[in-house]
Amino acid sequence: MSKSLPKITIAIDGFSSTGKSTVAKQLAKELGYVYVDTGAMYRAITFYALKNKLIDTNNFDKVGLINSLKRIFLQFRYNKELGFAEMFLNEKNIEKEIRSIEVSNFVSPVAAIPEVRKYLVEQQREMGKEKGVVMDGRDIGSVVFPDAELKIFLTADAKIRAERRLLEMQEKNQKADFETIYNNLMERDEIDSNRADSPLVKVKDAIVIDASYINKEEQFNKVLSLAHKAIIGHV
Image 1 (cartoon, rainbow, N blue to C red):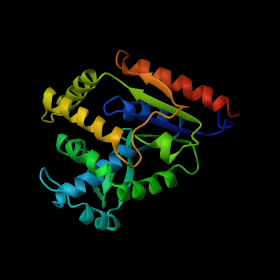
Image 2: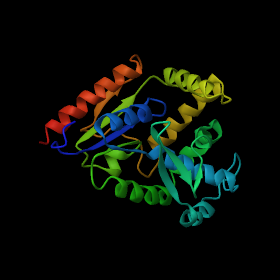
Image 3: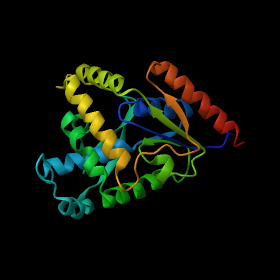
Image 4: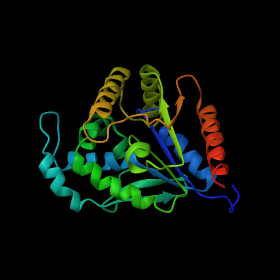
């Protein structure tokens, strides 16, 4: 992209395992933009809650987690070998740990806490205040950046998403099975879509892409084309 072209804000929202992070990373790299994985931020706080015994199958100490937020320092650090930024929690690299099925099982209830969302939304807005950012999550186009020049909403069939997620975890040698992943996705969809604070919604000006029957390359090309059009449209 020419340096003379204006920088815009690109918001990519959608359901779990629709390829949001993958396509957002690719797009940011292609455009020379900053990539922010907001899902990793919620996963990091969930990981903190699990490690500090603030949440488990039977209990959730919401007050304890809210009071702990001031002791949680999140940071993205770019890894040249991997080609993307990894998540650090209080100076420790937890990129691998936050992708576990255990964290996936608890991230939606943690993300539903208004105080957690407020804490992270403030950081996300700060990261994108200069534009030239690609941010993916659940409420980027609706809450974090409602004035984003390009809003994309990704969706896909739940069974296809579960199959892709299983393959991804198997490639990383992480323990998982289809039924567990599928049930987790359905539960997260329900919680994310119906929570009181900043639910997952498709805003009116978002462009919907159904990723059920297209591969990663096709998905990227669609998103890149939309980005080019949005950038040229703001010259």
